[in-house]
Image 1: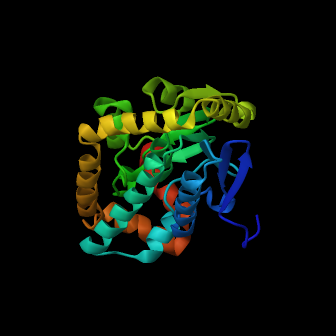
Image 2: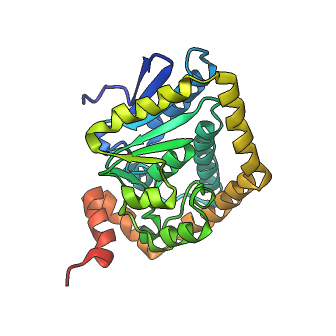
Image 3: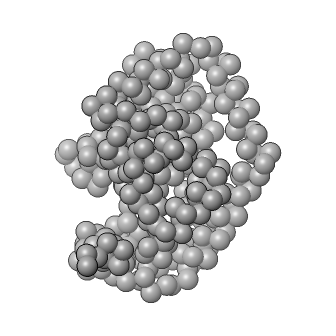
Length: 274
């Protein structure tokens, strides 16, 4: 991938618009440019009467490794106001996918971690390859969850276990049992299986599908979904501004030695061999 390649690719396959995150070298980590591109693409698909279903996938070796931690480290410490605005904006961008009138299907392979899991959960459905891994590793370096979709999808007990442990190796089969994803297929069948599901949905009357999506989403709104996301934004601002030793060390290693070394440091306490 060249440095001037678009960070998001779009193609129409009949009534299905397929969006491909294209930051291969960064494992499709969510930086400002990619988040903005997804936002624009979702808005365009929403307004296009020729589009019935949207697919979101990742180019290269993974779906999405989460928010770009290099970008985070480069920004340095932010005060509470800046963190609140940053987190509020990030969740708003995820909600644009949630609120897209057209069904959005995540097509997931390999790593789908932290903000990548948020992104997948913001979609209506998810098809996973059998090589996919999920999880929220944020707690392991003193960070919080940006968009708290997880308990609304898998339930409170499963969500607490995933978030408290920072486990980032939830397999595709485990994800299916938890309700994180709808289907698991062999890796080489992922694109075809996701497209087949999208085309099956697209056979139905678009107005009925879109109105049904609104009805399901509204049921969660009545239960307090959006208020809960707002509360998480406020509480996560406290976490991000707490200046915890683990977060400071992680940022320091990222800036001085690179993200790979920081991740090695982060995981050493959990995966050290006897």
